[in-house]
Length: 109
Figure (spheres, rainbow, N blue to C red):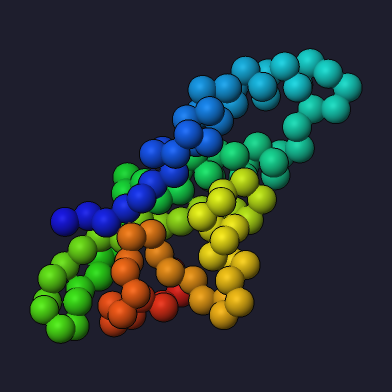
């Protein structure tokens, strides 16, 4: 069973996916086109938490259940999930869909 919240599920990601190309095209015609790193962050956000964009396999040390954990974008400016992860008081990162208490859930991915 795959555990992934995926950015594609949120209203924000749907809005960005629907309008990103148009916005980038319009901005490129103006005096100040979108900086490359900004475009890269939006595109990374749209791939965030999607299993087809990359994943790691994990196994519960107690019951032996295997599950897939989608890679995150680690984009702090656009992605609410990754931004919140990096802004937690403990600074610990948890991959998408990995519940607390799972062995290895605090690993760096």
